[in-house]
Image 1: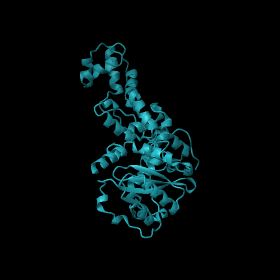
Image 2: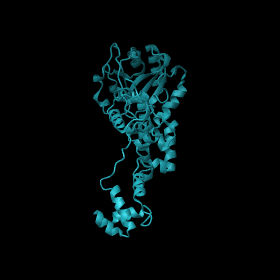
Image 3: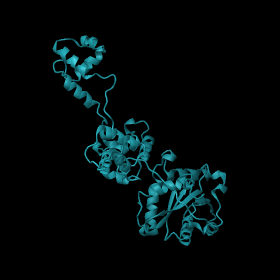
Image 4: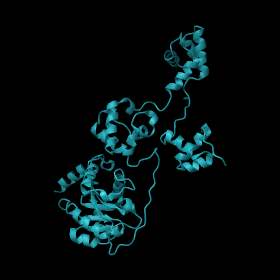
Length: 383
């Protein structure tokens, strides 16, 4: 069947947005509508992935017929109160209607109806559009790779009593993806953790890993580690780049504090050597356990434990959620190292700079405190 690429009808638009909201792919939506995929894609991107508001008249609003009665009554010299009685409306409703549309001598039903729809148009200018200092502050934080949720939480902690500086993360997303608003520059989308052309759902999938000799399962990890009450327990993994290039990532469970480690290759010898060197950089006894996945890069985990006195535990196969903090951190790192990046040219100094940026960004899971502050406070309490 031939596909069409001209404007969608109102019925087709309603079908499109209902299916998109339900998670149907754009290709399937286009196929079901008999439309060109580009037509569906353009319609979704034009609204940033947000279902457009459908204009409708409120049940309490004046109708075109009522406005015509007001217009004719004014021409005949009737008072607003008399017109209100004739329409079974409150006098204040009629007087406000007349006042906002030019007064008794200039009131016209058609013009008043058009003006009412214009005033009801959505979306109305958002706070970012009308508050310059807030807009500039949000733009600066986005440019520093802060997420909209982090910005929202930080603003509420920094300006607890100044409501003018409070903005929801969805308002920030809308201002980025719906460029018709003309609030935030489109270039700032590139600083988001997941760069998309529009707001949409995301899916993740785990992968199977091999067997590790003498691996101690996560089920044998002490229960005290689970509640994250004390620092010193870490999660680790490799972030993959182009051509099997890698960097190692270490995340402290209590504070989400990050260490990034330069690694020559994913061979177990190189990985374990790099991790041993990195543990030597960790202050005091701040690393006592390490939880890793089932990747072959940790085949020499016993050598690592002997050299560092750090116990290693392994997640169950295909269970990345058991290292949730590390998985989330690797996702954050894709802002700096998108998939397909060659990681072989990244120096340890550059990795330290990126880790410092992550450790000084507020985290929602930490009540919008930074990992550096949380870890410092925990270390001070434990002496």
